Image (cartoon, rainbow, N blue to C red; front, side):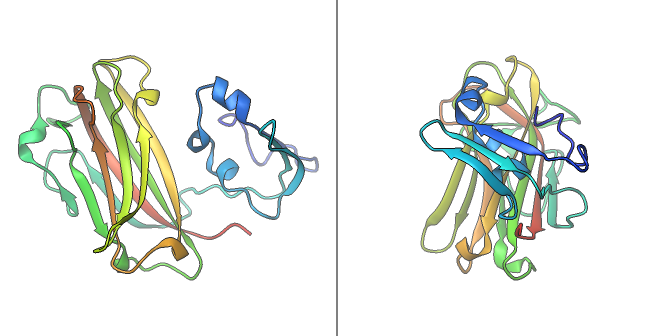
Amino acid sequence: SFDEFETDTAIGGEKLMLLNGHTRYLSDMNHNDLPYYARNISPTNELLFESKELDITLYNMLTFHIPDHSETPLLETFNDFENAVPYWRQNDLDLTSEIKYAGARSNRISEYSSTFEYPLDSLQWKGSHKLLVQCSLFCYVTDKTSTKIIISLENNEDTYFWKAFEIDRYIKAYSNWWPVSFDVTIPKEDLRADSRLKVYVWNNDNQTVYIDNFGINIIDLPVPG
């Protein structure tokens, strides 16, 4: 599996990667569930076979790009909902001690969660590098929900980037805490002046939803090549 794969094995031999859209669908996975190296394939890798009709591609993997702790974050933030945190907007009325993952409080979401908002012009990042936004949190829901985690980019004119991740697909059993993690890659050329990054949870069906220990990293990521 992707989780069991080690990039330093099969030294001296070929490392082949098969991407099959049909089996991914049967496994209830989407593109974002693939590991970073499978979603961002270096152009140095050799495409051996491709069928758009079958939704299958096969690569001879010569290079793997896997973000890790060697990539120094441009920004790290963590909200455990115990105290005020810079760049987070939150309503104290939505903080509760009735159900929490850790500490004394969590964020019960009526419609919108506490929101992280950051001015991207203040980041110092290089040349043609990309921004990698990594998010992790714990979620608690009592029933099936269409609640989404939202990552957006906006300036004074409009919201020009908006991506949603449904949390229900990460929940293995209701009325329990489950970890949720995902990332988004943003090319520098897609950014507009005076942009703000927003990350929040949108409870759009009024289910009972709690979140806790919400962490966000922004990483200056070299373009694979």
